[in-house]
Length: 263
Image (cartoon, rainbow, N blue to C red; front, side, top):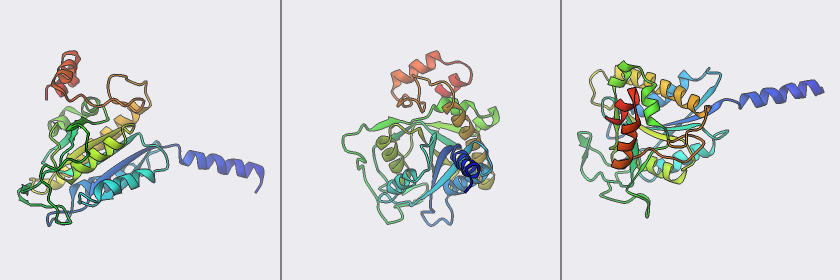
């Protein structure tokens, strides 16, 4: 190979890995459903960014099992070509996009979930079982959810909920284990439109649009000056979850971010 050809090949190879990496996970169907909206949204986000010059979205299909979800998410993370600027874990939930601010160190689905009998896909139910021994009951997530929320249009914000109750099923289990074991990774968790919602397909399309905006915002934030007091790729801060810490943020916020903290 001629020298200039070798140099060109090297440059092309380096450029191929220059994109910012985002990992989006979703779950397989459970509870007798044919589809899971979290995986529909994950695949759609990958398609949206397929030709993006700056962002490369990788997807990861998780089994809806307590035993298998987190190990699969970790496997997908370990296979990424470079450190991600965002890991976004999606689960299926209520009818609006729910941006979670924390995850629980607790599995608990002894009875009925989302209106139907729902063990995991291996038939497992768990009753008040700690996920990580010695860890706190709840931990804040690793992106600035206020900035993510405020990147949406006013109309999109009306279809988005800020949630501090992530549930106690498999999706929360995987999210808790990942963010606890990888505190350096900008990680967040969201629930997308569930099975029994009116205009489900329209709402899923809306979820895709909203999460597209949030991914763009997070990648932009990752390349700006670091913020020491809120989650950012440059630090290991988490979303505040105590009453005093939330009240402090509320007292200092204005505009859209004040709306976020007052949700």
